[in-house]
Length: 452
Image (cartoon, rainbow, N blue to C red; front, side, top):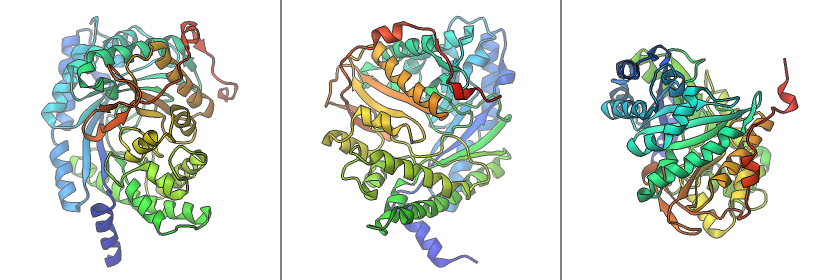
């Protein structure tokens, strides 16, 4: 029987606490689209993705209206393009990015992810061409997102690729310098990338995935903060239980919506990503949850333990509410997309070093961080390598999405727009990592990776 209080609670979550479904993501396999002719391959991609995606946005919008819960983004993820385009004789893959952009615009999705390469153990011909094509591709498209997986617990860290990706980030920043280097906001470097992540910029449809699937990522930081406001001064036992119960409600709503879209499109349901995804809106902040738990300002001592408890409680509560949990699942800490994080940087309590420490216990890594435009490529590579090490050693997904904002220095504001928000340019360590990065080669996998 429907409980009136539950209905009112859900309405309040939406109207006052910023609850929404962050994304419904359609994943499409392109493994059968490879061809020695790049032109033929791209036509296969266009025909196949359009066939599955043409009804995505209308279906999601209908479900959104019927259930009354906002669905903020509609997205598509595809098989890493390096795996598909590698069969062609093309010398660069910018045209593949352009066809993805055309598809995204025609079907009306917000982003399309999968302009990606998996090079954690080494590079193929297609991987090298795709990585070299990233700057021009992100400059010449609007909706395409790109990623490269550089490390894994089982393979170690591909330091040659880490070095090249640092250079790629700088090149992308330069090409999009007139828009505060926003191209870099559409690129992420991974360690232990997952195959079913519905969130951008790192989404791609992995080779172990089915032909096509519908996955969902929820939001909900405002709902969690509101729940914690009712248990001020209580023990961590109570705090953890409160987060678990709240995560259960959020997850139930998200899976209900996704399964309805899945049913109407006759496409199998994939996974529910349990991540708390903040926005620049006031009251929709992971940093504010941590402050509600007890730290005066996000980034001060105690922030990491508060984030660890939050992340674990979200997973414990959400996993019971979903039939299939996957993706990244946890708490995102993007600086530009979280007003509380921005405020903490401006107050001086949150630094790049503390953010790195927090990535040891959160679901992803250094995300949407504006850094000085004159940062050397080797420094960016070193930041990426550090995160790869955290992911490799701890057997978890980590990522780096930093934006070296051309023409801007520490303390100045970079404007990215929309859900990407804005961010103060953050201070980095001024000492060089050049000799480290120039060594190249591959860092071996840790001893605990050998589990056969």
